[in-house]
Amino acid sequence: MSDGKYEKMCNLWIKSHTWQLDDAISILIKQLPSAYMKSYEDSENDKRIFFKTLAQNNLGGILDLHSAIPGDAPSDIRINPIQFIEWLESLNYPLPLAMKQAKDNYLASNGKPSRKLTPTQIHKHRCRSLAAYFWKQDPDLTKVEMAKKSELIKIACENKIYSSKTIEGWIKDLNPDRSQGRRKSQDTPL
Image (cartoon, rainbow, N blue to C red; front, top):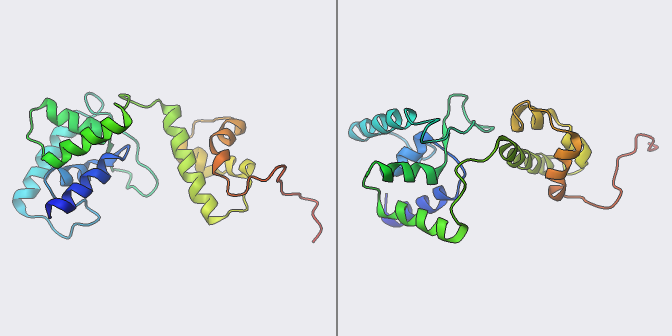
C-alpha cells in the first residue's frame, strides 16, 4: 500500500471509537482492513496471529473490550484505536510514523479521550446511530415510535430498559420532521 493511501487509512481509522481487532492489526502491519483484503502472505499472517493473541490477553485489562455493533459477527472484537496505539507504545513496539501522527493530530484537535465510556453513553451513541439509520429508511416515523422500536432496546441498549422519554431525548434532534405537534392520528379519515 502506498504511503499516501496508508496515511489516509490511519487518519480514518484513528477517528473511530472502536475498530475490529483484526482490522486494527492489519493497519498496524501496513495492510488494508479485511473488507479490502483478498489474501494474506504467510509472514504477515504470523504477525496477525501474534498481535491478536497478545491483544486478546490484554482485553478487559489494559485494552477495553467493546461490544459488537449491528453488522459485526458475534465473535468480532472491537477496540478503541487510541487505546490500542497507547498500549503498543507502552510495549515499545515500533509504530509506523503515520499511525503516530494520526493519533497525535487527533488528540491535538479533540483532546485526550476518557479511558472508557459508561454503558449509558455507549447505549446513547448506539441509539442515535440506529435511529438515524431507521429514519433514512422511514422518515415518517415519529420520535415516540422510534423510541419504542425493539431494535433500539435489544441492540443499542443491550436489553437495558430506559424510559421512552430518555430515548426520545437522545434521538429528537435526528428526526427528519421535527415540526411542532407532529403526531400520527389513529382517527385520521381514509
